[in-house]
Every structure is written in C-alpha cells, then in structure tokens.
Length: 219
Ligand code: CTP
Ligand code: CA
Image (cartoon, rainbow, N blue to C red; front, side, top):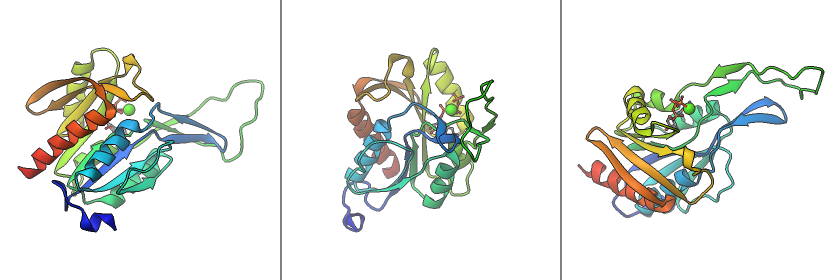
C-alpha cells in the first residue's frame, strides 16, 4: 500500500533485488549452501525503498527482518530463486546480490543413513539467473551483478563483468572475512572503468550504489 504513495527519486520505478544464499537439499535433513548473511542485499533493498522504488526482494534463507516498504519473496533453492525472479519482471533495474549455489544435488527423498562408506554427492550445475536476465526479452535497463572473489580480484571481476553481460559489477574480496559482518570493501566496475569505494559499512555501500542507480535511471 505504501508504494502507491511513494515519493523520492525512484518513485514509479520497480527494482528487483536478490539476496542471501540458496540451500540445495541433499536429503530431507541436509543441504549445501553458500556463505552469505544477506546483509548487503537487504541494505540495498532498504535504500531503494527509502528512495521511493517499488522493491521486489527475492531472498534465500536468512535471519533478517524485511526492510520497510519492501515486497519480500522467500525462496530456498536456486531453482526457486530463478522462478521467483522471472515472476517479478518487468523491472527497471536489478541488483543481483544473492550468493546462488552453483550446483544442486540429485537429492534423496529419504534421509541418508550412515553406512560403511560416506555417500558421494552427485552435483548438477544450476542455471545462472543473472546471465539469463542479461539475455532476457525483458532485460532490466540497468543490470547489476555482485562477485565475491579471492586473489586477483579485479582481473577476475573484469572478466566476469564481460562474461555475464551486466552493466555494473560490484566486486568484493572475501579473503578479508566480510561474511556476516557490518562492513565491506567493494570496487564498482562499469563500462567507464573501475572505482575503489574503500572500506565502508554495508549501509553506506547501499546508499552510494542507490545514489548511482538514481543518477543513471534519470539519464
Ligand atoms: N548468479 C546468479 N545465478 C547463479 C550464479 C550466480 O544469478 N546460478 C549471480 C550472483 O547473484 C552474482 C553474479 O551472478 O550477482 C556473480 O556470481 P558469482 O558466483 O561470482 O559468479 P559465477 O559466474 O557463478 O562464477 P564463480 O562462482 O565460478 O566465480
Ligand atoms: Ca558462483
């Protein structure tokens, strides 16, 4: 309801955000997952809503409250996240912060019992939600990806930006232990080059990114 009366620089705009990890079941009681608290994505969703956008937040399993004014869609697996993302389109911009599991398991329907030998996990690659959006007929005008890397951060991030077909890539070095903390150190990669945003709180990074989204959508 609040969205109908939204004001701010993003009033009338719809922005999609993905956040958190995905969980891929191994059997009814076990899963594999990525490391992600969801804090950076939720901070971005909150900043977008504060700027007046209608925000669809597709969230993996996280322990975080829904930011004020945000439409939250909870999912568990990468396949569920992909389906939820497709249902939110069209969107003016998409900020894909989720740490999506690259593989799912060919899951057992009954609990696997301990036996003589540990079970082998047979992994299947998940669809790339972001790369799919990049070539979608309803591709958001501004498509933003995130990348967590270790070592050679900028080289890997530049290659990833090109490979994924995104407008901007926000890269962070996860060797420094950002998971679950309130702060982060990111670089913003655009067609114009690379900007080092330095160490900052996740809230400050969210505000700065949203200010850039406002600027770019206004052009
Ligand atoms: N992403 C996605 N769907 C996937 C995997 C990743 O939408 N199945 C998105 C993430 O949300 C992020 C971006 O793609 O915005 C980059 O994710 P990342 O894991 O860094 O890239 P990958 O292409 O999976 O490469 P790798 O994990 O091998 O580094
Ligand atoms: Ca990945």
